[in-house]
Length: 476
Image (cartoon, rainbow, N blue to C red; front, top):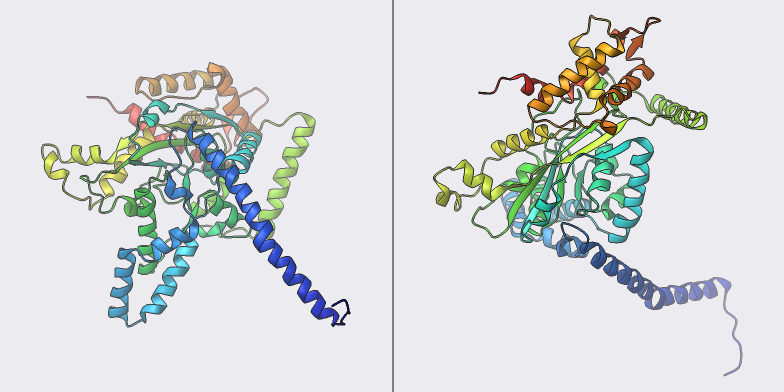
């Protein structure tokens, strides 16, 4: 019993490795999972007491369970059977594709990561880049929503910062779930987005089976009460103007909606605007269909931009990038909207599933446009586009801005005026343009537009062009 035996070192190492794995699997990992699960549950209970919209149980369900629900959903299985019959593809092959799509789409929400790390990071980042302001939000309306309703935030898409800005400002109201394009499927960004509740979509996919799986997941999320965020425009605005609605995710969400069902869908319009969109020149190049810059050029410009900002910060001359403002509008009940569309046929509407989402999409885009924040740069840009061939003094510029503000105010549109001081707001907007050489100032203090940067000037004027146009339309 006490005699020793000799074994090869490789075998000894293998036995030690197996023993360590056993201890990790049966002792340490269960304890660690219990510890973090306990912390997560405590955090969820804590934030649910503060949030206007509680975190639904669907969002907290294990990812593997959600994947199984999606793969074996009756609508997905019906599509698999149909394709197997019509295209002659083996059913097992189609189910493997469905499994791949489901794992690609379904997120893995982590409350600790979302409300601690992501919130902290988003807050630090947006405040480092912008002066962030919440224009207005109807929190009481959100708190009064029926618990048995699904809330969808619909917003205009100005910048990739929209995700971060909305996540930060909405974190005290709810935990949003975003659809993110394939550009973000990079390690470790992919894991981070998935842990924050985001799900990946293939833009313009022609695969009917993939579209069915995505549609079912979006509808499952809505049925589970998950607060979602959707950009109806489908992509970033290339010219700065509010775009037309597309029926991608929004169409999936409301297709077949039954007004007689117990769960309602409530849309919250969100208007976003910036004094400076970081990728404005890139978006303008895409709008003009110019070739994309190479990675070396983009990297060089990015490092130059970062270095310039650090140098200005050291000299105490950094002004960030102006203001970023978000407005949350009045919620719109889909049940109520469908009933209103049918007029006197309300009883019939309660029985008729929604088949055409285009009128709803247009109505939502109109509501988003109505609450688009009016910021200093947009005001100054609008005035200069109205006086392109003129030289303006700063006093004349302020006078024109005052006139424009009164015009917008009379039409019921709200402008964010920093410090409630119009003179200061004009100075802020003008400084953004002179620093970027979009507006030039001569020795006499006269201001003129740099014609080489006219597209950029129009880009910022376009952000409120629809409001200016509507404010000029006589009311009847």
